[in-house]
Length: 207
Image (tube, rainbow, N blue to C red):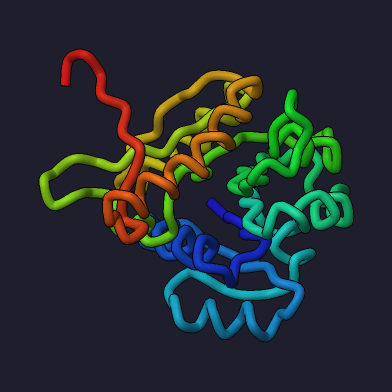
């Protein structure tokens, strides 16, 4: 599968690219600075290449939105023709920069309403992307939500390929909850010395 990462030179983007490439996917890192994207891709190696944002949007079958939230809507709006009908994995975090009855993904969706939106990776530190399995053998969770069930299923399979456990958190209405979990995650990590290696974990009754 071809995965285009918009904002692929950041820590989240490169971390996801490594995992996807190791799982056998082709990855296109998209950046406003194509040379920077090519350099980042060369450092990762394998099936990862770099290019412009437009090249990543055009070539990717699945698109990961990894730019800062303040840039997300404008980035998507400029590329919306290339994104029509494609799955967009929104990993951005608004940190309160949305109306109280909305979510980061709901706001970003307005820029490309004909894409298939799924929220994921919002509650994961970048440092954990290289460690889907803890030394104890427990898999890290990636919380996922969205209204398009087929798109969500594809994204959950993508998440699990490198070794994470995808947890279906329901529809778009729950995206705001994921947004609100992020500041708490950061506070708990600082309070208990997690060094950005802590994670949320859903414990099922049978575990």
